[in-house]
Image 1 (tube, helix red, strand yellow):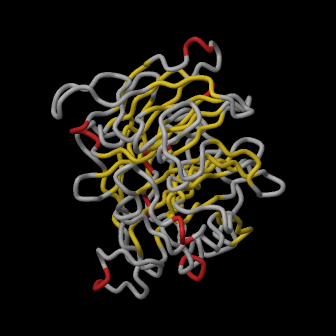
Image 2: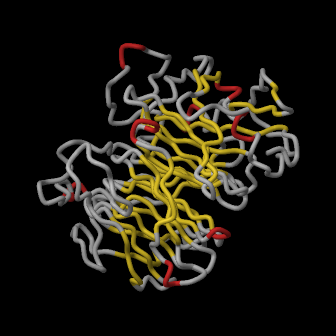
Length: 398
């Protein structure tokens, strides 16, 4: 099931993944979760997909602040990176991009929440480290790579100790040289340990490092054209998300304010190819602001983007050709989860098996579905995390 680039599917939550998994080609999920799970009410082309209610459970969600990042490990566990009582506010940075609230100290509660397949708490870590969390990535070995825009740093948490074992950048010091970041947004990690950093809100670049954290190089620059003019390749205005697909040596960047995705050679096969432009996906008129990108195991690129109204959509592209496979959103049914809608999506992650994906949203939920609190920015409220399971598919359907 496909749509033309100018159209989108508007689907109930239970049918969200129908168009996507028609091209996924990934292994089906055979284990039935033990918790509450609403069966799909639609089947099409042999696909049955369901929104998983109670993920995470309501009690846990009441303890979450803004969930700025999501990632999924090889075991299928989801990691949420949350800001607790520290939503990003307009006065958090001065005119020089320096964090203005360092005297508050780091967030004292857990900022990284690990969930099992039904949304139950596995672990909670990251106390007294982060000031303003942004992106999180789990590498193949289970290490957690995070960015903190207040600290202007990339921080890796060891898989065993769950404590920082690699920190890149100077704490609270923004910069644009090889040893500084300015509000870095996300990290992508290769299987050989090389990693890439989207940097970010100030510097409009993507940087590459070796496994020890040694700087290798960078690409990207601020736009040189006047507003409304044609954009050049390799120009970014807030590179907000990164996705790496190693078999294609492809690194794709969510160029947020330019409303497009740009893909480049990662330089993993031939280091000299690093940063060479491959193609753009989408356009400003087509996508709206692009917040994150993620590859599924079959090489489909999930692009999380916003309409100007704030409604979030996911477009699925084949990066080899640049072709749009489909586009979808959904309308929540406001059942027991009291969802406020699929708006303000901030991060997307696909499971390594391709049997589910998770989206975080900065839209807050009001207890009891209280419409009077819509549009407000509570300092602590159950912000949205959506999980969608793939129950059936036709093997090999493209």
